[in-house]
Amino acid sequence: MDPKTGTLLLPGGSIGPDLTRSAFLSSPMGAQARCDDKGTLGMSAYLGSQPVDGLAFRVELHFEAEQLRGYSLWLDDPRFGTSWDDYTEDKQLAQRDAHDAWLLSTLGPGGRAPSPQGPELRYSFPWGDVWSTFDARGGSTTIGVRFRRSAMPEDRDKR
Image (tube, rainbow, N blue to C red; front, top):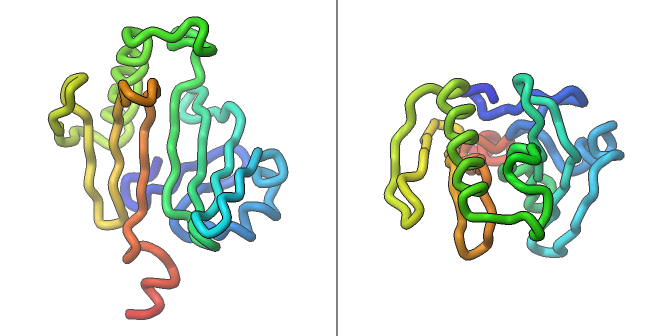
């Protein structure tokens, strides 16, 4: 992940604020993705396991109309469970700690925000926000990346 832009480099291409839904869908990555069109809410695209910095991450892209608004990552490692059958909160917290370690090595020191499951790692950049979280209610652990509207091409063009 590029700390200057939030762009994630994958073997099939880059995921960043300039990526449009149409460009993604016409790319080799888009052809391999499982897409969930949510009508007026946009579209989510799920990529299989992707190598990033020698680790395997699952990636979900979040589009609003044509624009990529952000993406989510989570380590694809059996140590953290492979299904609800072997789910434990301890595994999810270990996954969050592994996410934090990767973010610290990639983006450097970040801030901490309070949460019931321990402080969450958070970053704020001119282009957007990054966070690592464990959601006990949803039973998931993710790295979230959200681009600021001012980082979007259509919003930059209006200034």
